[in-house]
Length: 232
Image (cartoon, one colour):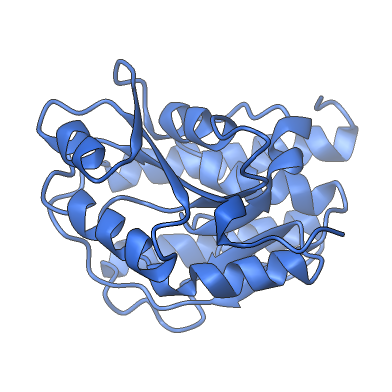
């Protein structure tokens, strides 16, 4: 098994009107990786987000706004084989970039997916409605997967690149859950690691009620497909 280094890491994210926060996130990535990780942003912004990202050396792929999952799907599939470890994050400065080296260590220890669990540490900075929803999503997924899962909608994970290209990803708003559930149900080695979660910078553009319903629907659909052996 290769012993990957920070030179093998790509940090990817979907970005949408996050000019207030994206520079901080990219600065943190550069600091904790000694500027060795590649960064890919898939952007649908109308503000300066893509300009700020380019100024910090990120590769920016611009596309029309088609939703969270469309952007993240493009982002996780973008790094080439020279970056065999792909780390996802959000661009709102909520996730601890200082954990990237630890996530890489866990991939080197044999895990296919290392998933940041915000819920176990309370996620007190998350709005109460969202926090309750994320716990409900995890409970639903745990029942359907037959395995205790604690945070199925986290935006911070590390993946072996090969896994990302072996599975066809179908969901949009529910992509974060799908990116965990399909590997779990297909028997990949998946571990959840407790992480801190900070208050977001800037305003969210997501509708929690509509988004929550779509995520719950995605969990049901993905688990049903995997159980029936219908997925590619």
